[in-house]
Image (cartoon, rainbow, N blue to C red):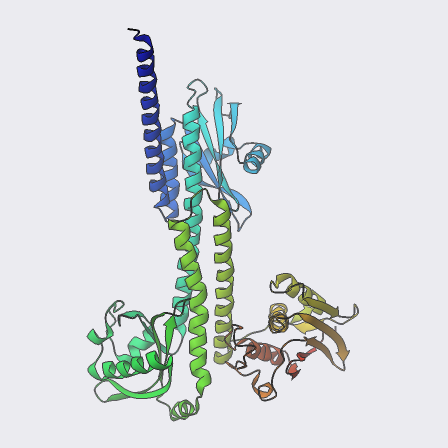
Length: 534
């Protein structure tokens, strides 16, 4: 019997099993590495974990991590091992090498690097750190040339660690922006004079600002997550039960008057509005209740005169705030839990959506802040020479909703005098007006901007061929919270704040604004502003 083939097969099987075992061990190590990094959301923890893992993989003498900082458009030292800050200058490399590594996304090795204060040469490896959309930085690794620590397996592991660190840093940046947005909105809620309470479908309080706790005489302790029936007074619970029932039935309540006594011998007349909180699919996720102290008789009279517009505003704002946050949250959760770390195309697509929704959220918040400043008398302007054509050009550069169906015509004389105005406020005025002409011209058509000197003023007409405005709506178009109620404009988002802010800015400059419109024919907004006589 010939046993040689059997022995060869046995050896082959043993080697195959050994190779598979080694691959499984490597995959296990890589999985553990990925978990260690991806699970971190603190910047310093990510950096320290990254440098610790690099040290575990290779026995380096020292390393320096550089990360990109957008505020200074430069790479800064973000982590050190085996190097003191005072010696950093002697570790600097020719930027052409760094630039090549970042552009190519590949390793680079320098076998004979010598610092001025060093007798022996060092072996340097440059490891790029990349995200889905941009270069994040690079790692300089210094080691002894004789040790030959960079094996093929080590470099493979280091590249994997770098890719996971890039993902973790982008996730951390996104998490930080989300936390900032949430804190931003929370600060806005705290600055509002009204009391705000939100509850989920299980009647648990999910948000309550300080004004609400003061109006209701609640303890300063945290009641977030507590069922309102377990923490509020019985008569208040009864009132909220009634408001909740009507809100679930009708979608909102408006102008409910309730006299509440938080302490003995003190009665506070409260004006109460409420609205449903819905997710993107229209499912109820809670209720928002707005409390207003109506102690002054003038305020009581105003409450009796409030119409459906107020309730619609609360509903619109809650929807406009909720929509981008819901989109951001769902896309981030998908990125963290479902999108493969190597699927850069999907990650880029998702992060673009998150960025767009963040801009949308910021624009809404800025409108709310402007209204708050206007009402409190803190709205300020800084006058100076402003070239109208520059403002218009900047607006068109920033607009994203212009389609090929729109024909843009700009007629601004080259010798038109400069406006005497606040540059940023002028951009805000024309961005709002031109954006409206495009937004309310869904089928395209001509969008015209024409400017000329009219007496002591500069006259600027912004015209479109869109859906137009009904005659009964025209007198109210610049009123705060007012939105045109028509089937053509129903699906166009907004809170009804933009034109009110525009009118205030124009009048603050000593100017005037008016509108002419015919349904189905289009609209023309006319702005008169003083020019700089110098």
